[in-house]
Amino acid sequence: MLIQNAVNAAGQPIDVLCRTGKIAALGAGLAPLLLPGEETLDAAGRTVLPAFIDLHCHWRTPGYEYKEDLETGSRAAAAGGYTFVNLMPNTNPVMSDAAAAHALMEKVETIGLCGANQTVSITENFDGHTLDHLKTLPESVKYITEDGHGVQNAAVMAKAFAICHEKHITIMSHAEDSDISPWDYRLAEDIETVRNLYLSEYYQTRLHLCHVSTRGAIEAVAAAKYRGAPVTCEVTPHHLWFTKDTLDYRVNPPVREADDVAALVEGIRAGIVDAIATDHAPHSEEDKLKGAAGMVGLETAFGVCYTKLCRQEGLPLAALSALMSTNPAEILGLLGKGTLAPGADADLVLVDLAHPWRVDKNALHSKSHNCPYDGTTLYGKVRATIKGGKITYRAE
Image 1: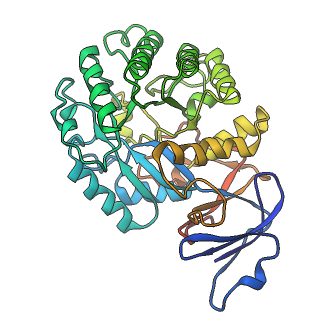
Image 2: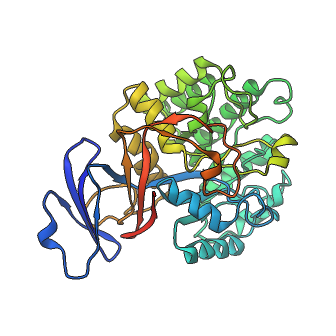
Image 3: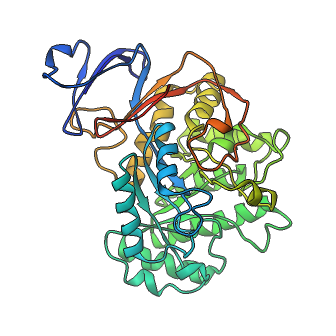
């Protein structure tokens, strides 16, 4: 495939030649290199970027397929410009078994629209104390998390960090003290963030902090990084876009004050924030009415982040691309992904930066439509997604 008439993140004209799933050449005027029978895609002046990689995603399989399944999740990812996602283990049953995780990843590959890594739980079946399964995990399992819960017992979490140091496993932390969160969500996040940062520094175990949302947590991450802790962190599009004054909608952690949003943006500028992850959390309307926390986010992520960070805050597009593609690839150890370079995987996204578009929750590819952006006007529409040199999504 040859992508013609595109521009890169710096606005420079560029063609991209893809062969055998890889980027074969980059530059202007590559048409003479096209072989008979190879496909062409006219970018019509739109911007080509490395496809997005989501560090934090829920596809609700197994057990909650009425909210999302592997096929609808794959379609939503492709429509959002994603070619790889990292799936959370809060399924039914809880994903505590490496063989089950591997089988699920194979099913995703069979669908062919998006690659996936399935994380494994920190404690067995989220029971909060059993770590025996960690000791027998194969080397293929590199990421574990208790997303949606957080390990409440400090001694259990310390033992998990010790085991993961020996096995070179990254802990992905949902930082929340559930005894505190009923009366102070901010303190609940901040205090457990500090605890987990200290454990990472003490054991020198890789820690990735999920959905950081407060100024206090960002400042704690900055201090831990300064001291040399092997820590990375992510923020979500909705914590960048909404404040508690602009949205009455349950997510966990909750949307925060305007000062917290400013702190997240400052953290992005300063390089404290490593990645933007969606925390795509599909729910049925009935479940939302019952108080389920979360929103879908794969199909709106780039538009929200480009509008907020690039158009409103002046962040360079290349920096946003690093947050959504390059850095997540590095955190997940995905060699050849997240970059535009000869020899890299031909995982690409074409985006229209010039024209506004309006979010319509009923047009989403996700099975669930719990989308508080409904009716919002954004810039940065995904026009096409390419995985391994093949088109997986093309906007009508």
